[in-house]
Image 1 (cartoon, rainbow, N blue to C red):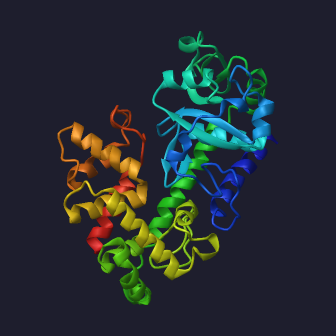
Image 2 (image 1 turned 90 degrees about the vertical axis):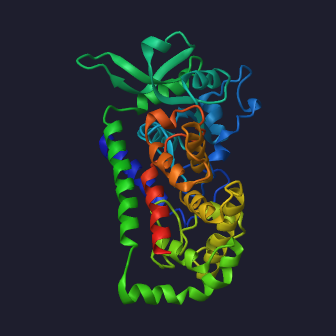
Image 3 (image 1 turned 135 degrees about the horizontal axis):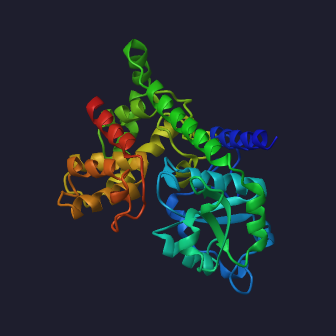
Length: 381
């Protein structure tokens, strides 16, 4: 029964992602499903008067506020941003718990364990959703609870999530909720999402007469709005081919919509409503305005042709990851304003040595997709 209930919740999460484009926006949202705020929006600290007098937010207050704050670090198993969605087994389990409690989840991404513990003890977070070594951190005013990993060949627990030692009720709820089957179920769920993303992208590479007809249908719109991006209309057309295969009704697993695969939150920033997001002309117009803003954002890249690659990468993965790769290129002797140098570090942001580097602010990324995205568009163009 418990396993069936867990599978039901996981499938509910999947359904929330698929329906992200058709639901009405809510006042408070999470990194999963519905309207999603930018990753950079997840860095604000909790207002202290939402908590108790010592700054710690009780379980009752969390449920009353409707929000739970998870403290985490970047990594493929812990938390990372993937096309505007929170991923990582530890994070996804925490999202599952938050849904069970009927609250939304906000991420506070920290640089290291010391920062996580400090924020927890100051009341700026509710749960450290990272496996901490109990032996190493047992004297840090923590109450270990929730998700755990056992030592090999022993019934003892080697690592576990943690809350502030005063949050007894929250700890109790986490302990009652967690089952040893959850990590495997959650990993399977994440694998299915990633497989959906790969299949989705592969299916949008049509060719032949039908492809040419679809492309020609939107040529006038590309020509009309490409000046907003300051780019050739043929480049915008090539980008559209990569994004949706010229399918105006396309909807990705992550909630991106229409010809240019706009996220609802991005569209809203440019004044495009959910009701209009599948309108071909408006979708193309907003995408061109977005590309124009990205070209201006990377104005420190002096050569316009080089700047195009940086803007395309940011459209796909977000400016933060691109800036991280630029910082790494500069640190390790490359040219941060030359894409052939920076794309190497887009790929390396999947390796701990690089996504944990002190110059990196946005952590782990699955860079191979962004690397291929830029190359495919430039080749088609």
